[in-house]
Length: 333
Image (cartoon, rainbow, N blue to C red; front, side, top):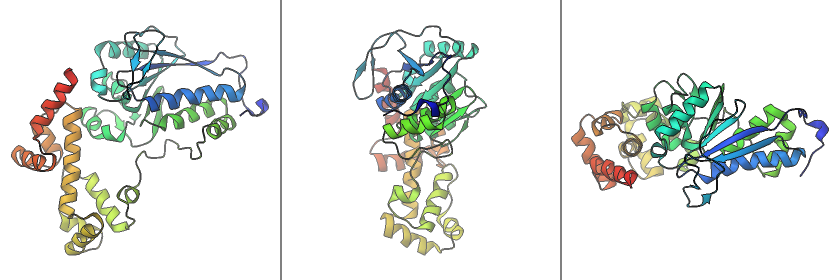
């Protein structure tokens, strides 16, 4: 597909904007492929090289993504040009992939004024390096709880992507396409960005105002406004749980009506559903942070470690301590 070059605002005298993709251990292929393919198609559509890219890894060795595919890289972490844009590509167990060498390299490049982005879970790496302090950022929804606990100075959002000055973060997956379409539009105009989206068969372009998760009615498969409101209140109040009586009152129902509503649509009581939300957050914190089990319990609304352990074992058939220990063992392999 091509479009009339006259309708694209292209600086023919400028050199291609270069992106340096850093493939971290167990990175997600989708977020990387979505980003680099958007740039390739922009070049093809414009009929000239607007963008170039370089693929690197921490040690210059082949990078293996989370689905087992290996990618050949061009070099290790070297000094870049100031007008380069770094894109860290994260994935599974980003904490383990965030090494001291990676952090030191990022801090050095940041001091030189390089624009730095984190795709998928790599927002964690940027935050760990101190590059997101005082800035807006996002990360994949599965990592939001642990990120918020560890990086209090970062203004975490649920957007699909965030551009705050020379720091960029995305939620992962196809959010890389939305980000790149914004960058292409900013660099060379909306017409080119729309043409790239058409080539990608990408018919619903999201902005930084769009949130990454499906709406509550879509997620639970039920369109009931009062049920959705109650679940939203539950999700927003994990550390300090709200009683079923207060939840019911907030939506103009009796406690008994709320009970019937949950059992009809979700086959469980409001108390059980709320407990599952809290335990899910607890598991995320155990798997993704170094928080003590006691602090995890408190962050998820449990007054005592013993009650937390009992509820956790009933739901996951293991204790929080064993969960933490098995995860640590996997990271050390």
